[in-house]
Length: 173
Image (cartoon, rainbow, N blue to C red):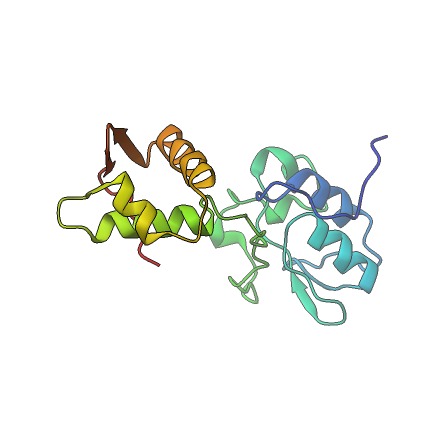
């Protein structure tokens, strides 16, 4: 048997396998419309699977992938491919939504600042010396390192004394 963890997962997509495991061992099983009231520990386990859940209030189970629940008589009616005609009249289409996990920004503050400076120029280019003068608080070695990393990521081109912003690479913040 696999061990289940209540810690949030690192990835951003919900874990349906773990959710189905948690749903089969709920203190109060799901009713015919997929609703139940969760305890604190159950809500914590469901949040760890990547879905919204609050203890003490009605929780509506999200629709589940067909291949995981069609053979399960307890959860078969919650399959995404289940015919809407056969659902109960009390069926509420507002279900639990996946949690949006924090994802670190792809660009650092200095990288965003450099791209904004390059994006505001008329030709989309700037001399490296002019860029160093505008960002005079940063040492040249640090600025060179940041420029090389932006060039490797494909946000800018560095040709001789000129630094060019590639098309659509300027995030206006």
